[in-house]
Length: 270
Length: 175
Image (cartoon, rainbow over all chains, first blue to last red; front, side, top):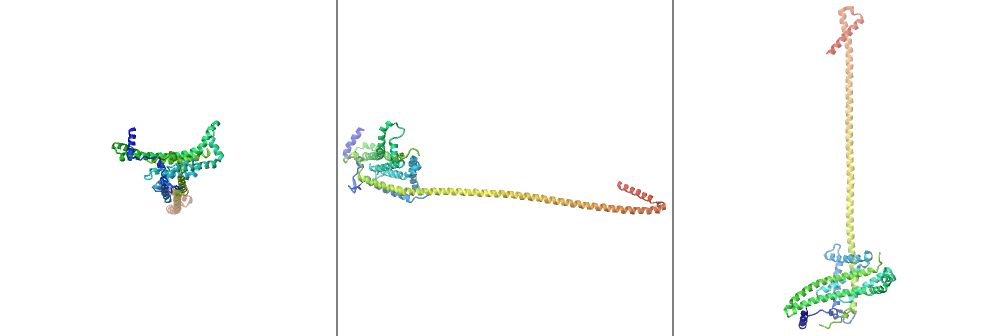
């Protein structure tokens, strides 16, 4: 392995293999530079993905028929999946009804944005900046605070959260600050970072596999290195498929955790 | 390769990023809340209503059919009962008529027979009386002619006639 890396390093200097880096997530501004409406590559991808999603789903909804075709059937399946398998399964139908539009928005938007990382030409998830997951997490944050205050009142909500029942009182000294931290910071930031880190690492690994393939199969001078190219290409295909899975999975996890956090603000037994 | 950015920068939200994330979130949320989901919900509701309506209609049709069947069966059974009643009545009437006719015929026949017997008897009696009278006078005249005055005594006369008649009857019964 060491040989490979040193050899790689040597040839890297010669033909400069393109390594993915975190610079990919801090691209230069390409439009409206310096204004609050500046657009860089990721934001461009995000806007494009939004327009495409709204057009496709909007046309689907506008043309929705009583007897669905295949595409409409698929879209309806996703809607039913979010409603039944995410919201109602976690919260039950009575509580959940109010949150179906929110969770549908979260799930479908994040799904499309995450999948942008696997769309050739876009090549980066539209959710691959810290801000986008953070905005979605803040929406979740606002919703579970609102739900808690509405259902229990601020005092009851805080008491239930900070001083859980059935715990001996000395534990509260340790537990209550943790619970407060959980309520204010951990929940939204774990949501944010989980999604962001997955998108970043996915992009890095996939880009690494593919640029290594490019390097070993095409750019490299030493033809004995080509088997490594085959391996990295296979790994690239595998990682591509894996990233598609991760994109769906992270959208699902974000949606189901949002639902769960909101549900925690409700009284225990209903 | 450009100078690698400081990793911390990755976690610092840019103002324009916040702006574009919020704008897009608001647009997307408005789309899902106000158009996409209500539209599909109305489609789902309409579909449910249609399916339920269809089911209800089918159920109604089945109920109607069952009712009609029940009605027809009831009608059929009453018709059957009526028919059998009519048949029984007819049969009873027929036997009645036959019995009537038979008894009338029998009584008529009996009457005719009785009449005939009666007239026969009376004729026989009449004949007997006539015969008796005629035979008696004939015999008397004959005997008187043969025996003369000997038979002028009426007692002897009648005794002789009786004897003769008895002989005749005996002869007749022998035959």
